[in-house]
Length: 631
Image 1 (cartoon, rainbow, N blue to C red):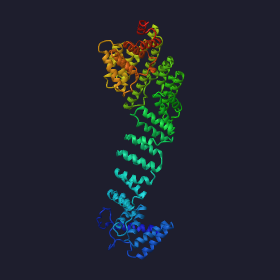
Image 2 (tube, rainbow, N blue to C red):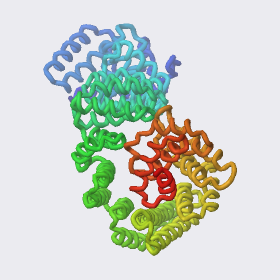
Image 3 (cartoon, helix red, strand yellow):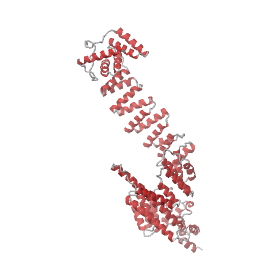
Image 4 (cartoon, one colour):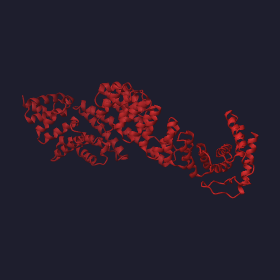
């Protein structure tokens, strides 16, 4: 150890003393070149030519390293180089020793001389040169020697590649860094830290296809499903839906990552018919045995939408409390269960699920709860809840600590939206009560006056919303329908004209807008041109659907328009395509069917339809008039 330290000190002193000698220009432009040894009297302390001594020291150094005597071995390496300074191997060995103890300038000087000596060029020598140029801040030469080292090692030296990657990060050569990470990742079994850096690089370079390949290789090498899920995510971003579905089709287990893949696969069905999406979900659930809560949730929601209520109930009821990752899913499942409970004529259960949805959302589901209470005819409870929430939000003030004006504006906008949502809910509950009164007390003038009062109160809430949000097209649509029910027809039609010409029409179910406005024109038939205009609007509603997919309610509207135009047979042909069982208790449908049959002289069918109509609407003047004349 003492010998090694003494040799290091002597060597450093010698090289410092040589610094006044003229420097020889080198291709790599190194700092403070050590003069060549031959004929250099100033290079003191090096006894050139005693090869036997050098060889003996070399043998001892090797032996000591094998026995773990590192300090003693270092001394022998120094001694061997002293007696054979023209050995490329020994010179680089000493340069590496100097580098290891922090004598960078000495190591650089020795390595520069060594690099011009004859002998076998090795990976470690190129690596040493790369590190020395890196410390000297000479990027081009650093890259040159890293590449030489990697080429010589055939890119099998993992540490060398990692060191090169750190250099590439420092010089921001992202393209080359991607190439090196591609080589390095398989050797590290796709360690997460490196994988994350490569993902960020590819994303920054917008190389989405390379990202897909990367996650695919990572999944194949590690078998980890999260890598496959990430691959599917990128495929979805690239809209490579056929590949997404092919991967989803292989899922037969019920891990968390399987749930992610299934949900991502559903995005590939966004523009597909609901029947196709439902078929996919049923196959995964029933055939492949995938039982993740997310799949069960989406299956239940779609089944509900497609009218498969019993199956939807089973799936949603079994999953609504299991969706811990996303409580909004659980809340939405409860809302669907609430709607189905109303369909089963169980309002108490419906309200219970609405309350559970509110609980899952930590009190953020009170709008739905209020409407559920109104639907259950618990009007006073609904109004009390809404009054309390309006009171809260009318008194709301932002915290004084918020000084940022942009943030303040966002917070105020959110608060205003909350207040408006409860105003709209209040209007909805008022309408629910009004409709209930109109349905059951049509002949009671006092009750009907109350219904009118409820509708006018709802209008006040909508006007308040419009005053703050004039572009709210949904509220305008609700107002237009309510005005028609209040028999304020001109105001209603003016509002409908505004809606159908609005650039925001796309925010609504335009088919419903066209059908409602068109049917009202057909039904009232107040002046010339109304029937043609109404039928044109109904046809616009029908054009929103694929052939044979239009709702029967819109077909009924068109049939009524054809009847108004005297096209009775066309009207009847269309009416006969409607599912009569679904409209057996609908007074408007029965009125239309009876009138069309009567116009065609189909007495038996007309009498049958008018008799059904009288059971629903006793005293209907058209029914009584027709049946009286047929006795």
